[in-house]
Amino acid sequence: MADPHSAISVGRVTVETVDHRHVQRAMYLSDLAMALGERYKQAGAKEGLGESVTLLEEAVAVTPDGEFEWAGRRSNLAGALRLRYESEGALADLDRVVTLLDEAVRASPAKPSHKSNLAAALTARARHTHALEDLDRVVQVAQDALFGAPAEYADRAVLESTLARALIRRSQRTGSDTDLDEALESTRRSLQVTPADRSGRGGGGGGPAPQKNRTPPPRPPPRPRRGGR
Image (cartoon, rainbow, N blue to C red; front, side, top):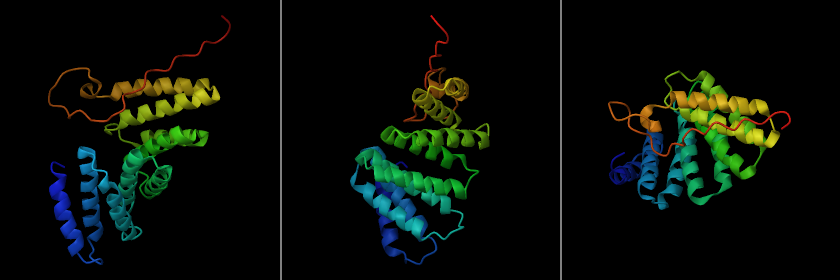
């Protein structure tokens, strides 16, 4: 979104004008909320984060069960709450993100982006709670997403990286050599599917633009020494 300020101005007028029973009200609420979120990403305007969450809460509330956008609007609300969590650090926001993305995954199990976002949210929560069950769920959700995602899925390398990091952390907690072996394989796969313009290998060309704020694949974990010295 090149100019979120214009989108916000138009969106406010539309939301204030359209009837609360209008069939497209949820879409207008979502558009305004997305513009506020984009302004925060571009300019750090925190004052719009709470409003974005409120708008998306209403969009979720007015979307009937079974509607095509039901899962997507929960995912959008989860994204706004995740931004607010990253800005303010309230763990309650992160817990709600996990709940919403769980609902989105159950409603659209074939969509890997919901599972990828859920794995990322669980990873963030595990850093706070140190709960082994969150790491277990990261591994399970990431593996499930990778299994069901098409080979050309754009975020496959990110998912592999998320999986490898969770396996490494879980191995550090449990001492599992199997997790280390699987983390090494996941890291290799991540490096294999990472495009040259994302990894820094290779030059320009007609490929996709580099992605910002991507976590680089983890280094392969050190193999444990077995046996005596």
